[in-house]
Image (cartoon, rainbow over all chains, first blue to last red; front, side, top):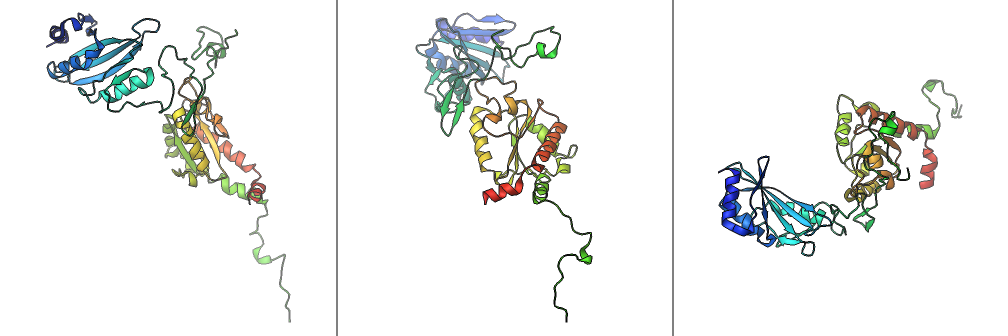
Length: 192
Length: 169
């Protein structure tokens, strides 16, 4: 079966839970309206439709809009070589949805990364620790309201952080300027 | 019967004696066998390895003995991006190195944070350690690292080694 057929099959199974598949440049995306049912849908996609490989879980911060979070699951079947994208919205108040680690073991680290950088929790996760930043770091740095330069933190004996000197950066280039120093300055002062 | 012992001029060792200052001798020993602590944290470490390999051959300058124990090394070559998560580990290894010790910040990241103007990267290892030589480049050519080593040797040669030793005793 091709990915659009597989997507229709998934929609027939779950009905109103899933929106109609959107095909863009050969990529099929389905939106799941109830984030709480994500594990169930994923289990069906794996066991019946042969999506045995979870490529990635990513998350989007729709800052200023509600629901704030979109969690994106990239599914792949090694048998039929079909790709399917499953998205679901999560409100900021909840910031939580069920884990899919019971379906794909590889979801363990993907979900830890989403939690670490975006602060979305996965209920039932077997090891809900941070994966890149250290335990005790108080922020979720890929949220839109977190400054790129970072914030000051201090965790004695473990790590500290300080804001980076961005000065209008991080990458400030002026195409067409005569000199290299103008074209690619080390940093641009905001006063200018 | 002649019982006097001969001191001073001895024709048998003429030409075999070199007169120098103690500082110059100590510094000469030190600068020609700087054992590096290879603090390889990113792609600069690849260039560091190339510097150690036969084509560029860091042993021409007496620094080929890469020591993976801080207790046996003289110069820490910080080669790569120092993240905040790694920063205190680098500091700890530096603290474990025995005196005298020196630091080379190799590449843009170790010197200033480089292209990582970011929440996760220390903006230069000199915010934690006293750096002796900075090497520009992303990553620097092995020749640039060798030049940094020569600059460090020139610096070591000028140090008041004996006075420092006496103060420590």
